[in-house]
Image (cartoon, rainbow, N blue to C red; front, top):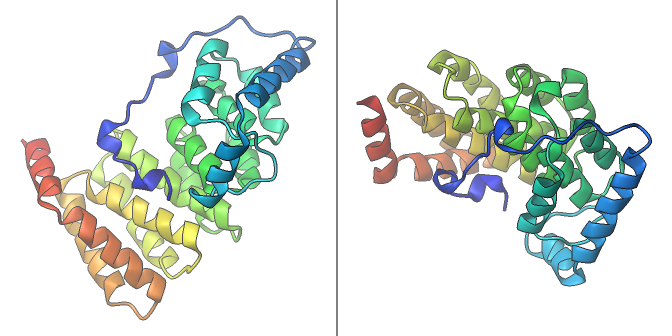
Length: 260
């Protein structure tokens, strides 16, 4: 399971300016704030939820308290935007602290170096997808990172490339068709990667692109048909998964309305 399995039509994205922005923390106060956040998250944690994360959702990480997403979002909302705190929370290595960091980080301070550094730390699909869906796709550097990360060997770093591409396809209303057409060969090449989390993110990206416009839908169908006929089992799975999703009548109706 991953964010690619969520019905994104029901997702809401809170713009950065809609969240409260706290006064900048002094360097001396950051360690205390980190300790306070960790204590709060630990108190909210549950061994049952931690086990469920691993056994039911496949979120395997060394350091986690077992906190539900809505509770982590509530903690982040109380903190407000605080980029220095976000950086410090990320460095703890704790899954919940890193998730909170995503929500309190300031998008306009996300640099290519930070994106690269956090990407190298991805150790499960949950943090990978949350970072891409809630933060990295707001960066003007995002498209460049898709190309850069698509060549990575690590499973979750490579997943990040296509998870980020999917998020851009879902959220970037200003990008034209050409911005996504050029990534179709990249997805087709990656489709032979048999690793589960890369395979699923490639499908997610292709499905998201195919849902943007009538023209992209037609191109995506052709790619998916080629993948379905591939000698690679991974590519065949992706092709079938994509075709099953984007040929649904509800997708055709949505694209028809968008065309008008």
